[in-house]
View 1 (cartoon, rainbow, N blue to C red):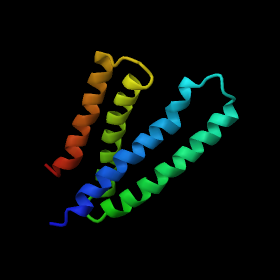
View 2 (cartoon, rainbow, N blue to C red):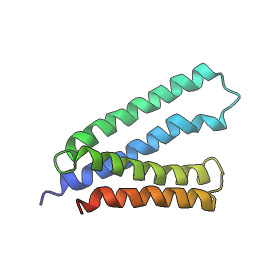
View 3 (cartoon, rainbow, N blue to C red):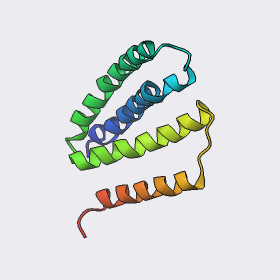
Amino acid sequence: MKLRPYISPVLLLLVSNIFMTFAWYGHLKFTSKPLWIVIVASWLIAFLEYCLAVPANRIGHEVYSAAQLKTIQEVITLTVFVAFSVTYLGEQITINHAIGFAFICLGAFFIFKGPF
């Protein structure tokens, strides 16, 4: 079993999602800045995200289907977003959020479970 195509995409997607979360939501702490500045800053951060996400998907497609790659990305996105919103934005995760995220993770389980 080649470990690289199984692990590398997950690690690259993790780091790329950290960048993307900052690109999409990091500016919420800088509401006094002009919108055009945060748009340009977000695009620069997003460029770094794409530099990681594209290779992650190319490497990962050797061993995962596109649906599995997308599912991995979504679960990572939720995980990164929860950590980001709590630590960086100071927001709380409610039980409703946790239940909704759990249902998404349940969907991820079925994507990887295979045919019944």
